[in-house]
Image (cartoon, rainbow, N blue to C red; front, side, top):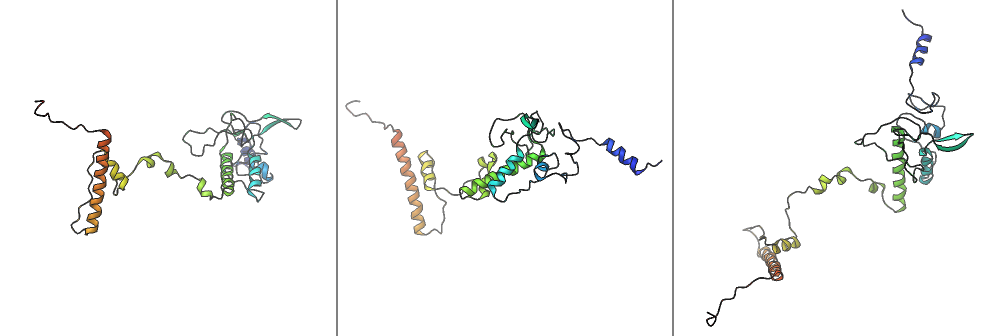
Length: 240
């Protein structure tokens, strides 16, 4: 038995379950995207899919004020007078109230929200995926402004994962060349370092090789004299 389109539509509306929000209504929640009837500011603060925030201003400093206003935590109101925070709960987005649990190994995990975004005390809540992406957009804009003020490129403020990896910092390949300071330091510790032998070397190259060996031996002699060397004294005939 087939149902009419009107009955199927009413059944689908009854089966619809809105996201886990506190104080949210179906007027502000749209699972297919942003509500087209909302203004730019309200749509950016409402729950929804991950999307980049489109600035209204053109100058970076005005854009910074604009995005900070978007990221401010939602407040309760009484007779249109704001007081306290509406979504300051654990694992809840402080802006839209969406429930979100971030794991420790999630690369998109945002920092703890501050009650004034740029400063203030940390809140108990967090950011949802949408507002975590907007917060990352805010951090990049702040770094761009800081780079422009100091005459640096924006890429200088983005560390690469390779440079921060401690394995890459410690790992090094075998040495193929030595500086004169390295040779002197090793020779003073007792190492005997000689350059590679080459039968077709010119007299100038051989002289340079001998000068390096002589400098290394001089460092070894200085090291022994500094530490002190006991010279055995042979007994004389009268003492015998």
